[in-house]
Length: 308
Image (cartoon, rainbow, N blue to C red; front, side):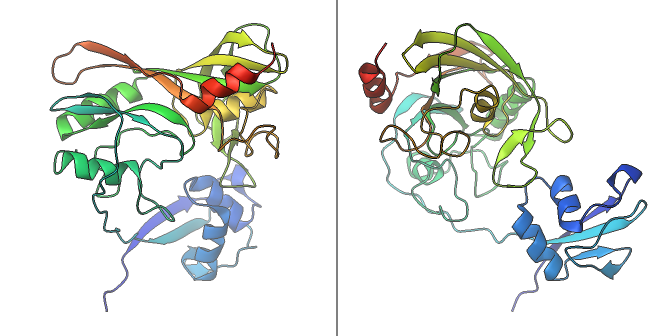
């Protein structure tokens, strides 16, 4: 039987962080982990303070050294699958795909097959960058499962590094179409940091204390009686950015039951959000390239039946 390997993380409690429950403290430090996961790790003895095991309810004190041992994730075997792809553009370095609604970008818990990565492994064979490991070969950015539209995948590490650098510099052009609740009268900008929700760790939220900078520009395309069709341009690419930002100003996306009304007035699968433009500098040629994909059929049909 193989011995479990651990990754050790250490944190020193500042005076401002004193008097906080241990699970909450670690949730703020490790924003990729859910609160329930952290609580399980504490109960399993994977968290110590100054070398001693603690409880979930243990409170922090200034100067405490908190040690978290994270068991290394066992890599899944990801198999190629013959899933049709809507390829927008492809060359030796990159492939641009128009992702359909309901498709997960890369394998994760609960989604080990039927993902975009499974389809890419079949289509590209061994021609995908390896920087992000076996679970995310070629993947430099992603869009939500129920968001449709265009994204770029890298076939080699040269392309991956170039595209990742452009994403970091916010120089890649990304425009989305969305349908939101309520009537928006004029264009605007939402400039508000986004981080993990302080209570529901599966959600994101406007978080001025621990959030990362996030900027969304929105433009009114067409007004309807109770809805507005908008175009969003991203300066940053935070998780759920458009969904969180539009909800924060009182205009959640139609169909988004996470950040909007619990009941959707239409028969939809998730939010009405479509990545329709992607522009970037080609990693090999240095040429700026921009691609556009049309609205998906469900989005078009919904717009046609809305009263003006």
